[in-house]
Amino acid sequence: GRKFHGRKTASGETFDMNGLTAAHRSLPLNCYVKVTNKTNGKSVVVKVNDRGPFHGNRVLDLSYGAAKRLGITNKGVGNVAIERVSGP
Image 1 (cartoon, rainbow, N blue to C red):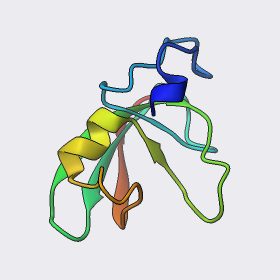
Image 2 (cartoon, rainbow, N blue to C red):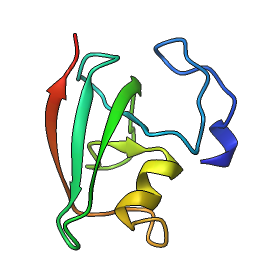
Image 3 (cartoon, rainbow, N blue to C red):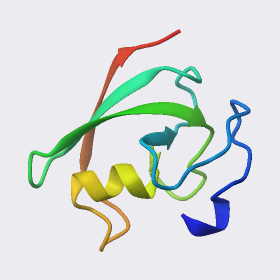
């Protein structure tokens, strides 16, 4: 979200909240994953460029830009499927 916008990510990139990126605890940095909203079927491909989330049982933190494309910005969380599509 906004409080991380402009900060460095674990990959060394500057976080852009409007970009199509995500944080994951163990997937390799700079790999790409397809994230699909199980509720509405919308999907987006994002680059894993940071570590996290570190909250409860959540498995992925999405940038605002990615969450917006998936239609999950109002709730802040969503039921999604994750599929690795490419990367290191």
